[in-house]
Amino acid sequence: MKLSAVDYWVILGLSMQYWLMKSEPDVYGITDLERDRITLWDGVRNYQARNYLKSMEIGDLAFFYHSNAKPPGIVGVMKIVEARVVDPTQFDPNSDYYDAKSLTDAPRWYTVRAAFVREFSIISLDTLRQTFTPEELGVVRQGNRLSVLPVQKEIFDRISKLIS
DNA sequence: GCCAACGTTGGC
DNA sequence: GCCAACGTTGGC
Image (cartoon, rainbow, N blue to C red; front, side, top):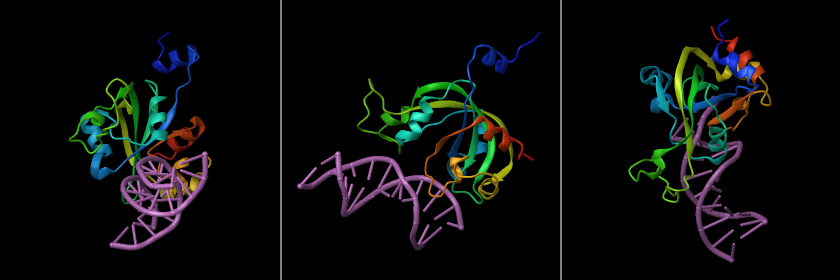
């Protein structure tokens, strides 16, 4: 019997986690990730989002969400391939994400490496609003600015069924 | 381009 | 520790 990685997770009693991560397609979109295959998710400078990034584990899946897009929405899936990576841009004075208050021996900003899994036709914010309540899916909440959000397994599965 | 939402900063 | 001012996000 051949076991998949997910089977091992189940056997070990580990639960896989699911996420939604935003990026502006003009800055870094799903086609950029498809080209690069793997990317370092740098530049997050919000503590709540950082805390979610820190709790990600290898094998977790995340929806790729295009923000500031016409229309905004979910456009693909990626897989976390490296957890708790120190975001190097915090120490780079030439970076937009430079943080002068972050110390090299106590970095403030951690992130992940994520790999391209698939792209699909957009599940628009409009559709997400029609399908989910703000309690079920945080991204449909008005005024939601968090760029990294957890997604419950049940909701992840329901979104997956909307993929055409 | 507007502006509501909301996180962060800094004076007190 | 409070909260006003300010800056940013992100939909529209």
